[in-house]
Length: 113
Image (cartoon, rainbow, N blue to C red; front, top):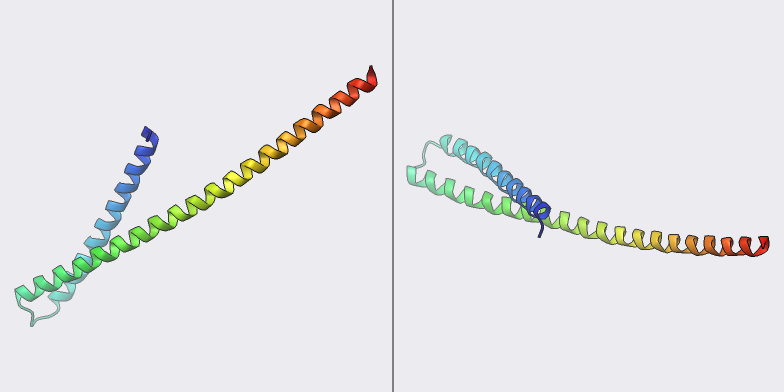
């Protein structure tokens, strides 16, 4: 893996981390607001609800991030296949054009001489 690929991988890892942290921060705010509005909860119950909700949101964030990464990988693979086909077609067309031009040059030189 060269430096460019490592840098791209590092940026992807940073984006993933930042997405998850932002999601968890928002989840923490939501659950804190929820438990603060419930007057009958003990501190232990509040902590238990917060922990459970944050664990669930961590799982959701991981699933969403993995789904996005899988989707991007699939699109990237499809793009590589299409690009490979296009390049092979272009190479075949250029080869054919080169042979036709060479044959045409031979015919012209043969008729002129």
